[in-house]
Amino acid sequence: MILNKTTKGFKEPKITLVGAGPGDPELITMKGANALKTADVVLYDALVNEALLNYASPDAIKIYVGKRSGAHSYSQAAVNKLMVDYAMNYGHVVRLKGGDPFVFGRGYEELDFALNYSIPTQVIPGLSSSISVPGLQQIPVTHRGLSESFWVVTGTTASGEMSSDLYEAVRTKATVVVLMGLNKIAEIVKLFQNEGKNKLPVACIQSGSMEDEKLAIGIVDTIEELVIEKNIKAPALLIFGEVVSLHPSFQPIKDFYRTLQEEQ
Image (cartoon, rainbow, N blue to C red; front, side, top):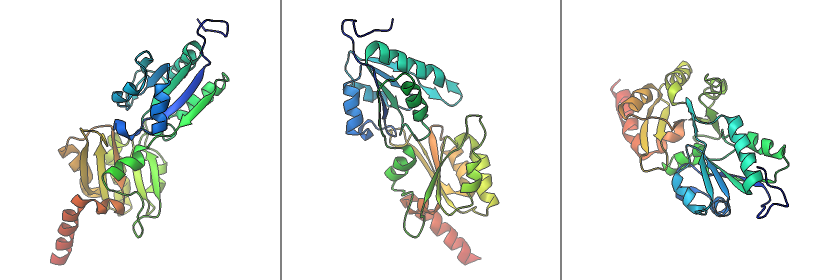
């Protein structure tokens, strides 16, 4: 039943899209945490740390609508409808999404759907894993003398294909951060090799900012083998670029290739 203004206890519908950050619950913004405190309903995704639900009232309804690649429990259309239905019936819905809602989070689709029903909406940005996860590992996505720009590219499109943007990105000197690309790592590595970038530094980070975080640091020619060796699984991101050489563990790799060149 949809409540109306004559219904006792009626609350005006409202939807807030909140970015939860990369995983560590302390990396949500203060504004995002405050929004959770006023939520009547929280719809949260698979990459959201459930510890964040502690910010919400014990009386708030909390619903998992997680979507992972290859194992979608809810279609986007179903999530959109749930979001609107709960707003109309219960009041303030916080749509809690991993990272930032507008960086491969389909946030605007949800915002647009809500606006079709004239429901007031608000967006609270979150720390995107594309920048924050490398940063936590002391890998800057830009650095004077090494990288003047960066690309953030999805490794796998909605159709399951590799993003065509990657073909352009690999030709640049920019840092290339690939999200959702672990299952395409062999194809992505091949693109860089075809451009003669076999020794370009690469990092692969699983579950960035979390206790179970895993890291592999290497070069284009070795990263696939290192990912297998360290048993890195999704969710993980890949960082291709000279900035990766700034990571402390890359120094032994530098020394190895310097020695190799001197011997030749």
